[in-house]
Image (cartoon, rainbow, N blue to C red):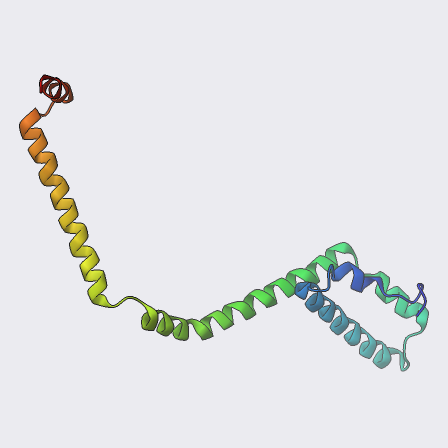
Length: 144
């Protein structure tokens, strides 16, 4: 293939070797090209000439190529969403199977409540001894 025969659409759609969105966009372009080829053959009764093929390849503006990428992005998003929806039940089952037992959560709650209660009792005791004024507390502490 010569440089003149090289289709630049691929280079415009696919940015890297791992650009899945770009490869899907290029597939959409190839689908449009195939439809054009079949339509041309039906209308004209012959395959397109090299000039007609080049003209077809040059008609794609940056805006239409962006539309291919946007369609590819939407398709990938829809696919990812469907996979997530399919896998959600098994993910939930695995999370429940590997999660903490209920008694551990209850113990954490009990210890937290007891700790909070002890802190409140200490705070009430300190308020009783020193009063409810911070300056009184400092003065009482300084006297001792």
